[in-house]
Image (tube, rainbow, N blue to C red; front, side, top):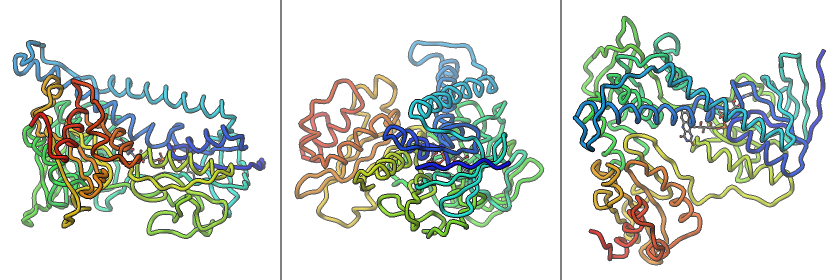
Length: 466
Ligand code: FAD
């Protein structure tokens, strides 16, 4: 028998967009039902995305440190015996973190009095869905619907997922380090995982159709990552097209049109992600689309009254923190608060080696403009960077500001640990800071953040340490 349920707010998808919307709705006293049919609360980010990838990257970094000490006799005066990795144990450790966070999200939703239903929702019309649960079907109708169904990996028709052709999801749960890993797609997900597996000892090759890695970032930012890959023997096939996989090898057509066969134990396909728009009755809801995404305005309202959409389903950037910010905002709008989604910037980070962070305008956005100042400051001149072996990979902080009023327009950095500068960059942009605001802030010594201070001083024409 089908149960029926009426609620003020129905949220579909418990990723970073949906669950944050749920908690905020609950805090605001809105009767809320959250439906998720995935592997656990927290969606892609928590279960098979941000968190597990950073855990594996962290473990790979630890392994590499010991392996380096064993190999080079201890540059830091530390020697070690050759290490070994039991990847199944590493994955079990990572799974423990994911379970802890799943439980944390469940507790927060419970505290906010959000009713969570585990099952797949299918919409019959814009405000009514049926959820198939282990205890039978539940028909839910709601005054407000928040769609947060997220995204899924893009599959190449000639390289379907299965067996040794894997997506990022399987790459985060392998039971052994593959001897030879070929990564198809040189975006941030492929590079983060490819670099982690190289650190763990795999022979890694990267096949990318564009003529450079991380094509969404400017070359100055990606050069240090490129150099790391070359120094660590990662084979790069740029401007190359992947073909099929068979007999333990991936067919590739090189930049010059030459056919090539690259031996691979696993082929990791990371050619992008697409919004999850199929399999849940979106076609029955009558919503306007914006290309492959659900169309929204600056309140995350869809074309249907009181149907809202947040997160990866709504477009780029497909980042966890964007979805959370949208989810929180929509809850407040439903509760009657006047809100708009109008960030100055949504900072993005690549957790590669070294890391990259970018916020606001980049060089391509200001190309040809003579009303901006651009200044860079290298980590090679920052004491803290040298003291933590983060000063020799060509990293830097770059500031782009208006020449007339010195307002900061964009901030980028490449270097080890620069992800930690991303929020400071976002805050400065959001607050409309001037170069003088950063220059006039006493930065703690010794820290990597001093490079941001020095870059701002340099833009004003008086850097101290260069
Ligand atoms: P999702 O997290 O995709 O959640 C959607 C949820 O909805 C899922 O649980 C799904 O099962 C459920 N669902 C969908 N349809 C239905 C239905 N009909 N019924 C019931 N449930 C349904 N972003 C960052 O900001 N930083 C990072 O470092 C980062 N690293 C990443 C690393 C990897 C390997 C990957 C794959 C992604 C990474 N991302 C990162 C991207 C980030 O994970 C996504 O931007 C984020 O998860 C999107 O959140 P969301 O709420 O839109 O959707």
